[in-house]
Length: 362
Image (cartoon, rainbow, N blue to C red; front, side, top):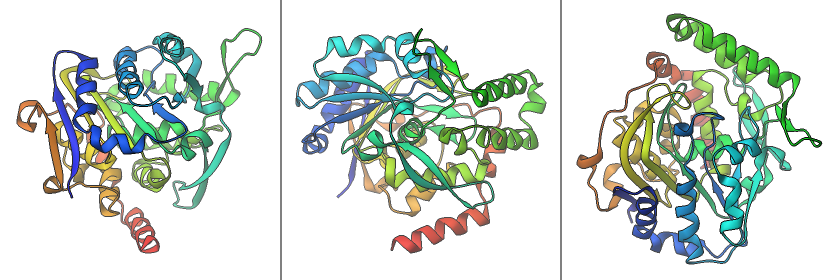
């Protein structure tokens, strides 16, 4: 049986998402008999609305769910460096619990942790902290936006869910004032990031500097999000390793306004006007990547997940439903300036680890 991915094109963000969910309602509705539903948006940037999930996209998902279930819904995010609650306020999320019954916001960085296995840059085992709420959820909905990425080429439904669910202790909230405050490690990472950004682009995007940046951010401070970054080959391996624990049960991609170029935070807008949805996260991500002009073989973590059979990836095994054809919406997204460096994810040593995991799973 083919995996269904809805593809909708239209002039209204909320309408597109509602239509995308309606097109695969028969696939989603059997999943709704749970005690609680987790909706995970992408609030990666503290100051760039283009880089984050628009609050109206969340409203569309809540509208659709509330027509079918009274189950409590948590809107869950854990930002990397800034305050999650500050991001909720900045982008208008704080009103959602007042607009919808049984909806609450949670900061995944403040959640109780479960330990998951990943790798460091030497391919030694490394334990990462993930939100217990996210890891144990019976219905995770990843509400992401299609973007190019500085390290893994594209960020879509799976990466949104995994990275937001990993716990960062680099910032907290002052209990007296409610203002965000950074830990010492957080301040060091912020300073390192500021120093990196003032480098000339030719230096900043060179392979050696890019690799050093990855290793610095991946090993400074108590952040499992940062610890995923162990160099270009290993971050793809780590996303693959965590996929079975944190994959979305439903993926919704809001491509009304997508991002190309220097994503995930500083790219350029793409007036795309599409939405995709699927209960097969791999089919959704692979389809979106192809519509953005990227082959599966270019995106390491998706390629590894395809090898493992985590979902449909071959076009003949994916049924597109909706009001748009691939030919109508396909376009070549501009890659990040570090495009040639991103291709360095291919590593014989990492591939051996992937093969060992696949053998152990059989």
